[in-house]
Image (cartoon, rainbow, N blue to C red; front, side, top):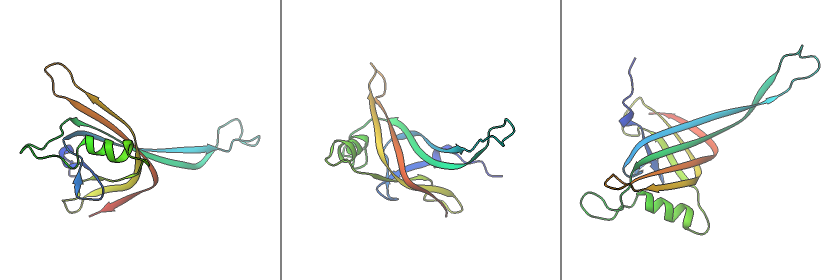
Length: 144
């Protein structure tokens, strides 16, 4: 069994080539909300069937607006805030969760809306951000 190094899991926005800059942690949340069908013939036990599924991604990382060489970032949290929340109209972000560079790896792709962005700056500490994306539509699994 191969245990995956968490550093290999990345979140890409706008297709497969735009890595979310300076991300340090990312979490893919997938939920299933079954529907209840309990009735008088259920013998006092709850019965359920399949229901709606939903997914979200949470990302946090170091907050920066320029790259290490001093050039402006095109994939930083400021850019995602400007183009996906502050812009009119609010637009969806396409994303891939996984490692798109390796072979025989699993990744997940979908679309969603950024639902929150938080920027934090403590005294003499690294400035950080956190972002949540709520998925819409299908979450597709790909094995490369």
